[in-house]
Length: 372
Ligand SMILES: Nc1ncnc2c1ncn2[C@@H]1O[C@H](COP(=O)(O)OP(=O)(O)OP(=O)(O)O)[C@@H](O)[C@H]1O
Image (cartoon, rainbow, N blue to C red; front, top):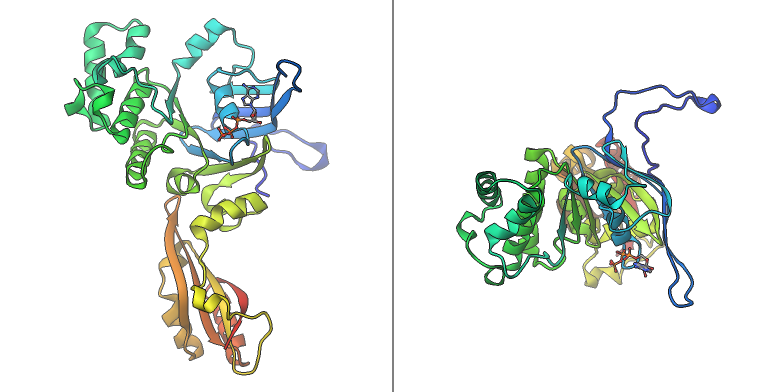
């Protein structure tokens, strides 16, 4: 399990000495947070979250992934004050927001932007007026509003749609308006609630690219919730996997994806990192070897290895034919990752030489089975 990292203290053995470290304060911190919804009309209370310990480092993108009912919406609603935690504390840029009054939350929300799956635009307002709304509420003057809205529409690539109404826009354009509106009050933190779930894959990619630009260029911390693992793979620096109201695994996206510890994480990442044998081969693969068989190996490439000419090097080192059966090379959180299924002769010493050469090339190899 990738245990939560706790910046700020360093525990030394059983004496638990706390030394201050100069690590930056997380933008958002959950400390043993729990949420139980009260039972309504004779129903039992519903435990939605328990024991949530999670840091969202400032300037990063952290994605929380989980299946329906896992507690994702509850988690994000606690950060913008739409729900209140029943246990633990939530700190935003070091400020404990757990016990804020409604007027305290109104102040706090100006530092937090939020975008939604269904955009939540006002249909009777133009694009310009939708983006202007939070500034009007904050009491900004006309000149300031015009300057800011035009700048934000340029940022999201919608300057030419300023006078249009939401009904005249595509889903991707509506979400761009949502992003511009969320940025209007110069938030430090952007919350994204299934922001691409209503969009097609190509539009999803363009919105994710925009979110990454917002993060990198404006330094805005992003906490997103999703049930789609490609979203995490594409833009998240860190990931937390939530199940049954608890975080079952968290860490840097690349580390979690390439070495998942929890079965739920493994089943999520398998869909983006796994490689399957072609069907005509899959049913011929056996556990036990027979004379003359080939071994089927899964080779995993990480980082720089993923783009190295490994197969030709392998053939050159051991002098055997390496037959590629299936493969995928991809990027996870910007780092190359690859997986190949190959077959090689199972006779010793060739097979031992192949496994030895793979190890010497720094690759992870796993025997899947044998095939004639
Ligand atoms: N207002 C509420 N009152 C009572 N129970 C609730 C309330 N909101 C959510 N729950 C319950 O809390 C648990 C977590 O729900 P939540 O909506 O946070 O999950 P989720 O991961 O966002 O699911 P989905 O992806 O389907 O939206 C579920 O059992 C849900 O039924």
